[in-house]
Structure formats: structure tokens, C-alpha cells
Length: 114
Length: 117
Image (tube, rainbow over the protein chains, first blue to last red):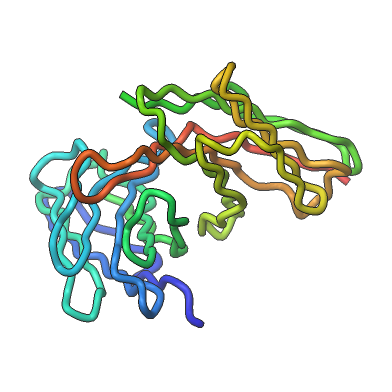
């Protein structure tokens, strides 16, 4: 069974640009979550999607958005990039999103904003 | 609000030594779940263990063991006879029962473990 797949693996953008990251969950998983990892703030929850609906959102500005498609694949978008958005963005999936379910993580997309 | 603290930011040991990674959490809920994840240099977080708040039994899996104590709000992780392949960043995380649909993991800051040959 294939794991969580994130593309691209690395991305370099400049301030003010926008970026879209993609995540394909494990087959059969309907819940997809996104996390931002930085050396200063650690791992922080961005949002969670289930059946194409956003169920939960972390404390991030509106420049961060996401969506989920009918096949459970998810994308997250960051508009008007800032230097502080440089981070490893991790996607995780689980079957139905229950609090007791373990998350399966992808290898992440390393975003560098210059 | 929930919070997870991993006071040890970095630990260095020599191969075959035992090492314990500390995790202390805060939550107002009586129902919650605790997790440990391992992050090797590849970046992917690898699930190690899940424990619910009603199960205080310690668990052992090979060289890994976990000690959950509700009285001290701690969920510590011990690696016995460490190996170089254990070198990674280890995260403790907390998940509460959802107040609305959906939930999230709150992670500690992580402990970087370096095992030297």
C-alpha cells in the first residue's frame, strides 16, 4: 500500500508569490491534515479536511488555505508569500479523522521563500 | 488549552546506552490520546505508539518502552541498548476528544537524539 505522497519535495519561491502544495493520502483514508514545521515554532497544525470539507483550522492567517477533492487528494495554497513561510509542510492522512487514529505522514514539501 | 513539553532539546549517547526521552503534557480533558513519533532525516514522521488516557499500563516493544503516569502528566519513552539507527528527532503529541468535528495533534518541541558508535 502506497504511503502519503507529497509533491513537490522542494520548492523555492520569492516574497509575494503564491504556491500550491499537493498531497495524496493513503488509499481509503478520507481525512487529510496539514502541518507546518519550522525550527522556531516546531510542528503546528494548519487545517484538516474530511470528505471535501474543512473540519478544523489552526491559528494561521487567511493567506493559508486548502481544499480536498472527491478522491481525498488535498492541496494547500499560500498566497503573498513571506520570508517566515519558509518551512517543511507535512501532510498526514488517517481513515476517518477520529482522535484515536494514528496519522500517517508524508515526507513533506520543503518550501524556501527568498 | 492543551500543551506538550519536551524539555530535552538534544541528547547524545554512545551506542548500547539506555536513554529516556521525557514528555509532559497539559490538558483539561479526561479523554485524550498520547502519541510518539520519530522523524528521521528523510523528514517523514513515523508513528511509534498511541496510548489513551484510560490505559496507564506501560508498554514494551522490542527495545522501546513507554511509561505513562497520569499523576504526573508524563508519557516518557525509553530506548534500551540504543543503536545508531535510533538517531532521529522524537516528538510526543497529544490529541483531545473533539469539541466539534475534527481534531488536531499538539506536538511537543521534539528531542533530537544522537547515538554515536
